[in-house]
Image (cartoon, rainbow, N blue to C red):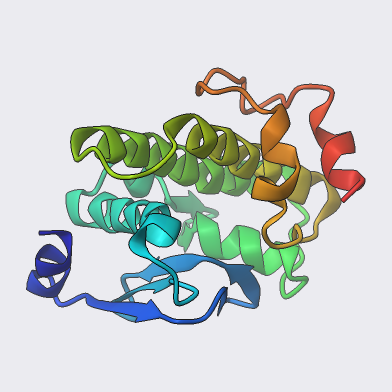
Length: 196
């Protein structure tokens, strides 16, 4: 059903046998691009049980785009009379391709980018429940919390995180609910990442 919907909207689903992918110089497990018209997931040559959560997450990014969700609509930000895509501004700044002197503008781009991910994670959990996908929901939410909170670390230190640290260590300390103040990560969080 999901693959047929992607194709119906001219999005090409790609199931890569690689263990990870590179999207915008970032190692990841999948990505959705409305400009490239692709949804790509690393399957690692494994069974769907091992990568279905990645597909579900990227599919929810597709749904955000298709349905123009609240967080997705907020990705466009007007600054000094020009429109920008918050995600692009934030990641170009992280990658040191762009300097941004206006801290309020940068923080707003960061928050809007993070909020797209948080909305997507919540949508993904709803999708997993609705279709009873073979995903450990508690583990998924813990990883999702680590992922979303990591955006604050990226904003603070202006650098990328290491791939796959979510599952290996940090996620074990996370809540099984989306109950954090994502604007103020818990005190224990940054030291967990800094030690990885």
